[in-house]
Every structure is written in structure tokens, then in C-alpha cells.
Image 1 (tube, one colour):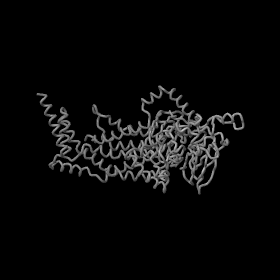
Image 2 (cartoon, helix red, strand yellow):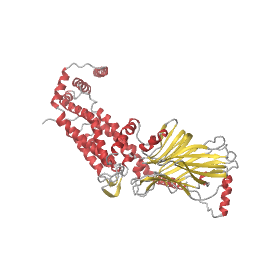
Image 3 (cartoon, one colour):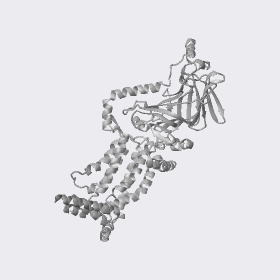
Image 4 (cartoon, one colour):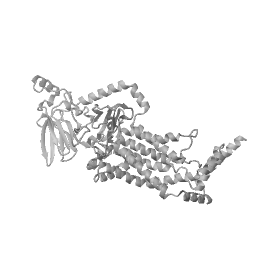
Length: 619
């Protein structure tokens, strides 16, 4: 009975893919060492997280002032000095358009509610980026009479007017009728971007110009998705600085950056939504902090990360004049593209290098086009078909190389047997055979490497595609989150507390694909070689376990992609390739004289020299 063959180079290619897959998952999942470290310091971490959450959620709520108590009010007026001439009143003023609702408090003059008009959370309540004191914004400065004031403690007088169709809210903390500190908000119709200006008038003799003025913006990310760990994975502080550079703080642990220069904007991303503060004149520097508040999956936890940013503000001619803007809206390329000059799209996690380019200029517009005409699930399937058809030539070349290696296997076995005691001669004879036959030993790896940018681009695309959010397909209620067919009464580490069907289907498809490409040609385990049977089961296992908590749209893509690949390979095998013709072509190639290139010549000379040194050593 003829011995079963296999393509070792193809296996090497698959090993590279699996290795990169494992690396990719370890970038998004804690390592075993990190888990042990987390367990060892669990009490410390939890205490720090609770403290950070408490601080973040109470910063915006300074001690309330009982305005009906004249004694308390008098004491407060002494504390704030010249700004005691402001009329004290509690309450908020609403700025609202078709897509965004803001509420600005009299105390602090800051935004205390930022609500999306068109989006709801997984449990059907409006998406709030700011609510119930999870954010605070204010200036800290010194006065000429040696007071240190925080605008979050000051009262502002609101005045709501119109500028054409725009709503304009002026918040003034007054020293007198013509001396004041003003926060000015201007909201346009149907826009997520709100112009924001901090300016002063007549305060040159009030503010101490010799002392620093600091702007501080704190915010805690509010949970919006059913899996807080999954949402937290894509929740991150991003900022543009130093002439257009984009940088990020860690999404998995506490992180900070001190002294970043020329900061154009700071984004507190909460997966599908972002709170962004930018300045039309870059901040000269910024100190940034991100604290992770999520250690494990929880159905009751409310917050993901606590962010903080501190920037110095310079006086201009003794007065404040800082033109800025707020963006409260979706982390969506199409929406952010409206503000092209601000480059807000750079805050979207498209990926690095060529990965980001593919996502930004290929997959995002392609899916937007398909999703505009078709239901999201059908759009995913159609996009998958287009991607696999585009990659079909690579699949074809890969399969051709497998067949060539299969044809050469008997001769390679003869070489191995003939030179079984001399690895050097075995290698020389094998390379000579490859050269005569016109077969590249690395050809099995190249197709796999070509496909890796596509693989990783889609891995980044589906979990962050806003177009999939809360779009259902078959049994999946939300293609941007995991699908659930069964709830577990317990939590399995890495796997979760539920069973998702799409990852199971994708795992089965990958298993049959691996059987087609490697299972039928599986060799006996050789000493010192990777266990190929283990490699064959590794990919389905990864899909089954780790993708259980990922976006169901991603698992749907891999399921359909592997089905299509299986059909393509069956078509190539049964109707396109003729192994007899390939065998005949290889035999013809072997008869033709093969001219060595410089690399091959150099390699042959090096191997001959090594062989000569070896023989000389034996003498």
C-alpha cells in the first residue's frame, strides 16, 4: 500500500499562522504569568480599583452648598473671594440636537450629562457617556490675594442664545458685570462636535499670572455592553500629539504618560463611543492617566476604566483665551470623517501598519457599502465571499505546491534513506532535487504569510465595526457581541459563562479544513519535530475557546470563510489540477540544465566547505 504523503512546508506555514494567532490572542488576553500575578495581588488590585472608581465617580460632585442657609453662603463667598459676585443657583441648562443631548451644570459650568439620542445599551437604556458624576472638568488657578480656586467649586450664570441655527450657551463666573470667566458652548444641528471656548475678561488683576493654571478632565467609562471584559478590551485612552503622532495608553493595565507635548486631542474611548477633548491650539503638554477597573467578567460592574488628563493653560495678555471642542459620539469612521481637519478617525483602532491601511481604506468602506443595501449578517457573508475569491489565486498556488511536494515525496524518501547517517549530504541532495524540479522549499510558507494581514485586519475590524452593533442575524442578537445558545451556571476561565454557537461552527469548519490539508498526509511523529496532530487540533481549539467571548460577526466570518476555502480546494483538486501533468512537468524540469543564481551558488559553496571541513576533521 502506498505510503501517505504530506507537505512539511505547508505544515510550517500553518505553524507560523498558529504562532501569530497565539501571539495575537496573548495581546488581548492575560498570560498565565499575568494571571498568577493578578491572583497573588488580587486584594491589592481590587482595593486600588475600588478606590480609583470611587474617586472618579465622586470628583464631579464637590460638597453641595445649601443656598438657603445664609451662613453657609457667606462662608462660601469668603472662600471664593472676588467671584462671590456671581448669582448662586443650582440647576442645569440643556443643549440638544437630533443626535446629542448635553446638560451643563451651573456649579462648575461643566457637562454633567452627555447622551446619545440614537443609541441604546445592551439592556435598552440610552447610551450616556457622562452621567451621575462620572466626569469632571475644571480649571485650577491662583488669585492675586493668594487663593487657589477650582472652577468645579464655582457657580456660573447661564445664558442660552442662538447664533443662526446654532445653540450658544454662555456660562459666566463673575467678578463684576464686565469682569468674568466664561465657558462658551456652541452646538450645531445634527452634530456630535460642540465648539467650546474658555475665556476671561477683565481678570488681569484677579488671576495671578505668576502661578500655573491647570486644566483637568477626569472621566470614568460607563458600561454599555453585556460583556464588560470584552468592552474593556476596546476601551482605551488615545491622543494625538507632537505634530500628528498617535499614541495610546495600555488597555489591559494601569498606565500613564507625563509631559507629552503639543497635544491636539485626547480621546477617552469606550469601545463604540468616544469622549474627545481637543484644542485648536495644541496644549503645550499633558499628563495622562488610565486606570483599569475590570479584573474579571461581571454582570453587575458599572465602569471599565478611569481616565484623567491634566494640561497647563497659558494666559494671553493677562487673560484666558483657549479655543477647544468636545466630541461626544460614536467611534465610527463615517461619522468622524465629517471633521476631517481634526483627524478624529485616528482614534479608531484600525490596527497598525498595513493592517490599519486595509481596514481603513478597504474593509470599512466595503462593509459600509454592502451594509447600506443588505442586512448586516448577509453583508458579512457577501464580504467573506469577495475576500475568499480575491485570495483564491493564493489558495491555488498553495495547493499546487502541496501537489508538487507530494509528487517529489518518493524521491525525498529515497534521499533520506540513502543519507540517513549524514545530515549534510541529505540536505545537499534534497536542495539539488528541489532545484532541478523547480520547487521552492519555502513556497508552502509564503501563501500563509500573504494571508496574515487579511486575517489580522478582519480580526481587528469586526469587534470594532459600529455597523454591526445591535444588528441581529439568525440566533445572534448582536453581531458586535457574542451569541448565546446556553447560559452556564458557572464561569470557565477564558471561555466564559455561556456557550456561543458561531465559534463552534467555525471550529468544526477549521477542523475539516485541517483534515483536508494535513490530516490525510499526517506523518509519524519524528523526534525533535513538532507534534503535527497537536498542531492540527490547535486552531479549532483556539477558535472554540477564545472566540466564545468575541463578536459573533467575527466567528460568522471565519465559519463562512473556511467553508468557502474547503469548496475552493475541492474544486481545485477535482476539476482544475491534474497531478499526472504536474508530475510530467517536474520530470521535464529535471532534464533541463538548471543555472544557479548567486544565492544558490553561495549556499552550495558553503555546504561544500562545511562538508570538506567535516571530512578533514575525521582524518
